[in-house]
Image (cartoon, rainbow, N blue to C red):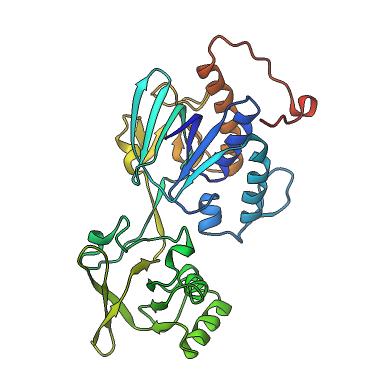
Length: 336
């Protein structure tokens, strides 16, 4: 069980900046994200994309911005849960929200801040017979959190983008066997990664199956076999496997948050622009996941929302406390 002042759902740039703003008020944060690392869309989808509208930076790389936000948050000692999706929200008392993830992690918080960008990024799952039967620790997963988990294992990866190629290359020295399944003869990945993977295949360090689609998975209790169809020859091949990892990208969905009683408009959460609170006291929504009149989906607008949210959350948690805002240029940044 995790206890914190503020639970932030979403570890994108706006969620990360919220750590800093609430930290200045001596509030501790725990962040939860379904992705395997901090950064949200910036890290997962376009880490090398230049961003031009962050004040003080004529241009900054997406991943560079994430790294800087993490460094800025460090003095306030945030904690994180990655690779887990929030499933339920309950309330034990006036200031005791309880979040539970799909893997059973429980988080108690006085305030909830939803900073999920466009929503929870969920994996695009291929149409494979019995696929869902072997999820949740039984052999099928859609992201790699700990590469060591696959040491000495027989791993089948599927996909033709950077993620699939990069992991095939990385796991070549860790897994007992690596098979990469791709539906085409051409890849969407960086040329260097493609060349490296094909060279490993020539050296028989990995197996690459082109013009091939996943068909079905089998096993008694856990995954044992993956079948693959060659679309040119119509041959079906059975592959012994301990793990199957389809890597076909992510799609944003509001997910379970849509069932929490929040006011929703067109897949976004309605907020009060005084402090970006929702219709449920103690729950705030900042960044691209909220909506209000004249809303602009810009990172810098999300930063503004995080600042106002932080001061409102402080007052919600400490209604009797007297607080006078001090500029950081005067007070500095005091670590916990």
